[in-house]
Image (cartoon, rainbow, N blue to C red):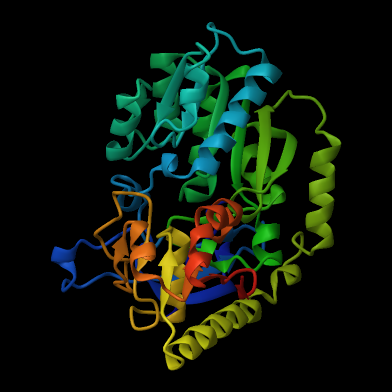
Length: 409
């Protein structure tokens, strides 16, 4: 009997596969040593395309509460991400004329990495963060934070308690919500009638173009184009008025939306929609052909690792991001081919990658063991990491980037 799934945006039956990556554990469920012999749950990573509204989506195999209530991702451990947040804050303060009388609310505010920049300028802020452990880190920085999942009801409650915001930011969360319509309604409840909502999310166009299939994991329920994100926001009375293309996360969009009576969208909105249409993303058939590209990445990476093992070369990893766990589990890579990885986050050090059980060490381990190759898992931070790992060359080590195609530098 085949499972029946419905589109989370329009309710149509989902019958078409976008890509099927097999089974994988939750990508942020790092395993402590004491639980290495315990069974792990693997869920399907079978991404569907809605024939009706074109939303590319992963059915909610796992409730959001199971993923995000206690979370191992702390934004502040990426220097480039904190710098990106600071630039955003400076731009928005200037563009919107924000002052001590304004309010900036961030949804999925993590450890306060973004709101700290507004607070430093004397602008009142409010975080909304579902992971209690991460919210605690934000509060320790003096960022008032509500521990809530945003929906229509919680959005209204938060607005009643704290007031509606001049600016509502939601970075890398729109793709992470199973109830995309309820989340959009929550955003509308939080923003003033003349306020602005900005959302950042990885752009489906870039995911396909750059073969970024490792950004598919259970935490990402939707894979958004400007077309489908506009349709989702419109269900809550929010209209896209501007868009910026960003380099973050391998190519993202920052969408600006205002309550319905907003003016005409900018030329940038029309240009991005035109680029999507030219790439075929406004038709069902334009989404085909991604699966063979995924298979090529898998076969090239495995070929490299097997060849390195045959030649007696050592390979270690750099980073323990969620995307790396999709890649390693899909390729069936274990510690016989990748002996360990390192990560700057102390929360991950001493644990093991989900599914593959590859150990995670502190970055100093690389200099101690001097591997021949370092496989960079957070390839989206290529520039930052290449400069951090400059010292690897001192013993003749080389960096390996698996996506968009295998590259050894």
